[in-house]
Image (cartoon, rainbow, N blue to C red):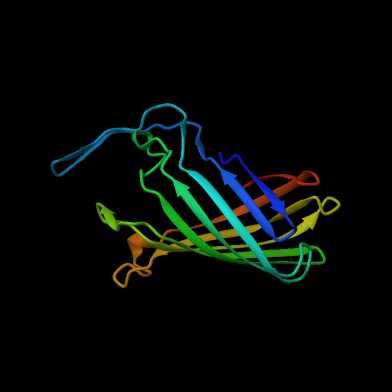
Length: 189
C-alpha cells in the first residue's frame, strides 16, 4: 500500500509525501554459502518514507503537453528485517512529461535513483539505477476514470550493469485511476 499526499502551491510547485506500508510478509529463510538469511517477519511494516518536490516548467494540467522536473528523497525509515527498507537514504532527480488529448492521456517519467554505495545481493545488482515509467490511458465515466497500460523498467547505470539481465527488471500493469472528488484520486494496477 502507498498512502500519500501531494499539495500544489502557486500552480507550479508540487510537494509530496508517500509512506509505503507492507500489509503482510511471508517467506522462508535461506542459507547461501556461509551466509544465512532470516525470513521476513510475518507482520505489517512501514517502508522508506518518500518526500518529493516537482516544478512544472511548461504547460498546464489538461494541456496536450506538460513538462516538469523534480527531486525525491527517500529516508531510511523502513523495517529492514521485514525487507521493507534498505537502511540507505537516496536522492532521485526526475524529468516528467504528460498530456491530455481529448479522451487519451499519457505520462512518462525518467528518474535517476542515486544510491551512495553500489552492492550486489548474490547475482542481483543493487546500486544507482535509471528508472523509466510510461503510462497511457483512456478517460471514461465522465472523464473520472482512466484505464490503460503502465510500464515500469529500470537498469543499473554503471557500464557493467546497463541492460544486464540481473539488473534490468521491468513490469507491465493494467492500471486504473478514479477521481472521487476534485483533488482526491485512487488507483490500482
